Length: 217
Image (cartoon, rainbow, N blue to C red; front, side, top):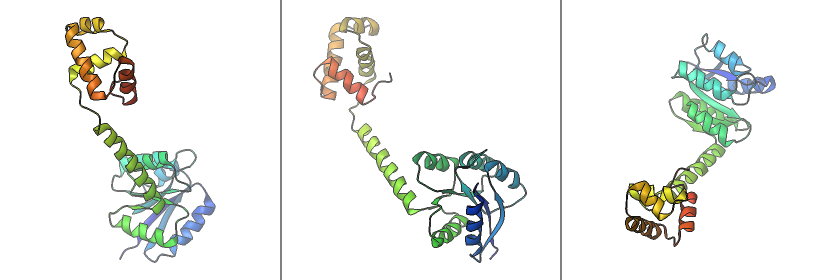
């Protein structure tokens, strides 16, 4: 088969030299260009038709996140594998949002890079085991947050309106005037709010609303 054309983007020449030698040990890979920062990469990508880009994240002038975003806006079919020295939640999220196909640690084993190139070239995704673990942790956190949100009671629009006014410090009479309801009706809504939230007084109700972000303050 035709060789997979690769471009290396990293600001450390020593790393690029070593990584190029590693990639050239694969019979199916050809390193066609190198860049030391995002700007250099964006300049040369127009003249080099690459199959895969290995993109460092931390670089001067233009980092890997912005370089990936700009490159993929212009060439949406480009396949980028992000390279990093250490795990970072923010960078991981930013690179995934940019649309990279893979995310790997520079310390990965040779066999892992070989697998990554083939898998991404064939249209798949590849993440180092440590990255997968981090993604799993983030996903579990999102699931817990979502479950916590799903476990909250459902409030009617009127109850939310009354709760918002309570949180603003309004008393029953002021709430009644603001909503054009009777004080008795307001008391019924408050009673319903107490029951749904498991609270027993206005102070606890306000704390509950803050804690669970029911009302946007």
